[in-house]
Image 1 (cartoon, rainbow, N blue to C red):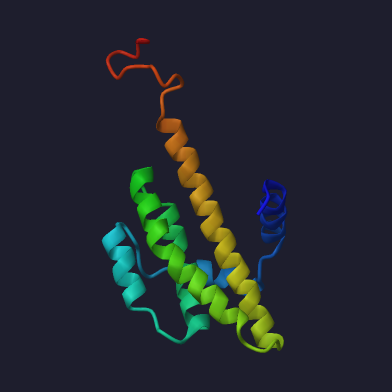
Image 2 (cartoon, rainbow, N blue to C red):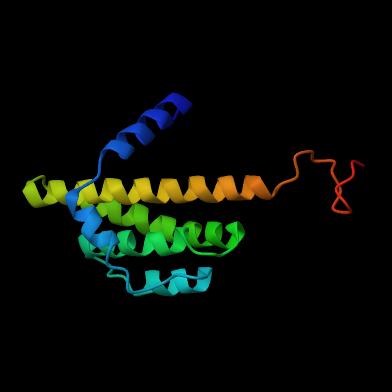
Amino acid sequence: MSPASNHNIAALLSILKPSIADNLAADINQRIRSKASAEQFINNLSATNYANNAMELYRILPSAIGSNNPPEIKMAILDSLNPAIIRSTEGLLQNPLNQSTAKAISLGQSLVRRLFEGYKLVIYQLGGELPANPKQTSKGGHLA
């Protein structure tokens, strides 16, 4: 996919936000603080109820993205959640389109957008930790 296509998708996803999303985001009972807790969360998801999985993942993503964990841990968490998010979204798209399915698809799109925003934030945080000059040493910040 071209960079222009990726930009268009990001713009589209930033516009789409189902009304159900705000209600789901406000109801967070669980926190993901490590890759292990993310994998445990994924193991507790239903193998066939994609709509419920999408809602649960939508609820949990803010705690994973907004945690005080170092960016490397956040990236590992997002990488663990990514396959479940894609699987849930693809499962939502397999249903015939009706009113409730349209809402579910909109939720799936918001879920993918939230994952994308999480990756973007973590990559930005990782970039902020890098020295401005790759030849910069860790001793006193002098150039090599």
